[in-house]
Amino acid sequence: MKEVDAMNVKKFPGAVFMVCLALFLMILPSAEIKAEEINYKEAVYDLTEGGTQKFVLEDEAGQEIYVTIAEVSQGKNVRIADKTYAVKYTNPSQWTAGYNVIVKSNSISSVNSPYVDTVLERASNGTLKKESSKQATYYFSYTISGIAANIGIRTQINGTEMKVYKI
Image (cartoon, rainbow, N blue to C red; front, top):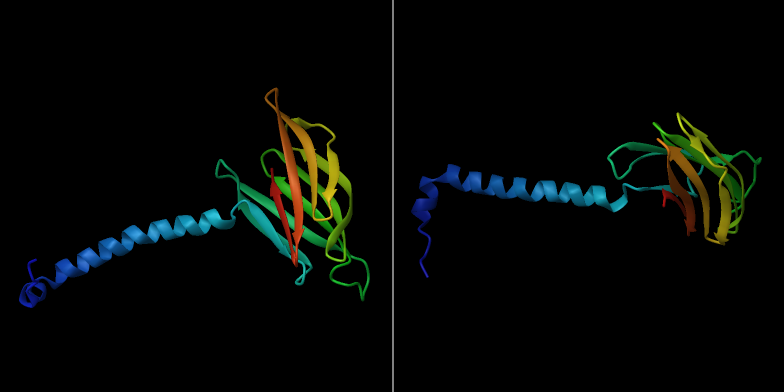
């Protein structure tokens, strides 16, 4: 094994710097991609923070999607775990869908008031289902250029988080 001469390293400090910079730049983009992959498709609402929380997500095609989750006013002294939340999911060039989620004791008690509004094409009246005490989904069909797509907007509750995403 050949030893590295300290004198040679001192003669080429620019080369050592360039190698370190190149390694850093190769590692940096992969770290950014991993950060984006973690949570870009779901909105995570903090039930303890409450109020109106807005999120910008990205769909499979790279288009921005807007999600708004807001407490529906129910007066003072209502427990954090016992509130109604309005969920709104917007695909700006196509449709906006939403519904209410009633939460009691950190579980989904019921869901109601589903709607879907379209920009250009049409959508079928969907079905809003409470699938368990921790999950509800609004299913509807959207037609664009004569082709129907089945869409679902799901809400899940886990602890103090409410997650909303498209399925």
